[in-house]
Length: 376
Image (tube, rainbow, N blue to C red):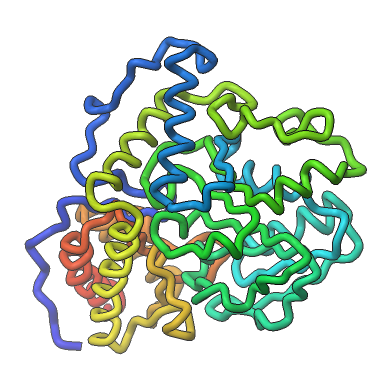
């Protein structure tokens, strides 16, 4: 490797964490509308803010008119758990897993809900499982984007329009960064702290009419905690999807989320956000093509994530830690080490709140740090 001089130009924003993710460019907490703080979330002003968060989400994502959007507790994890505990049971279940979170849902379904007719369709990190194995008469649980593997499903062609089962999709690192075929998805979950760089602790739950029908016509044989209950007397609790949250939300976090939604809307909406993530990925693709010591963990270019971009390097685990520490010390890139259960490597967030110019400024530093650590 040709000796590299230490770069001088640094990213304006060195935050490349995959969760909580970077705040939007120009973000300032002083710009938040905090008129709801200190007020009850059940007050007129509180409910209006919560309802706006649901309605603006649906509008920006261009959801079908008969889909419902609700704010639920416990981030994306809480939203997924609500769906699993409330909906699964009447049909066999196919679980797709190619990274840690998909495998986590398999554990919940098989060892906590103790369902018998469950099939795991999995693949190693870097690969997608064989999607053709999914049975359209089964419920299917899957992540749209493997946050810890950098591998996403390229499309929804494998989901049947005539399916009998429900599709339950954990899309926390995909919504607002990837095109989602809503008519193919019956339950979609995400959290504010991912693509929009919001605050944690709150999840979003999107339900299709097919999911609502299941909720209203199926009673799970196990007890449901209050935080999971979406029906009363056999009918959907519509208030959950109009701002009447199950438990008390952080109105400061709600104000933060509304700020992020307004930012997306002002800049062109969902299509703009998707294009920006793809542009950010392209910066890393060019860098990888120019250096033989770095590659994507994803083995098929068509499955490359445009948000949680996972990379492998010709370096030991100890060297990778040293590279990350050096970049953090230089205030160039924070929190880019791979997820703890994933193969050793780097993970760079490329969602819409990250600027392509900052990625372009960071990458020469990555080459320099690699040389500093691995040439010794």
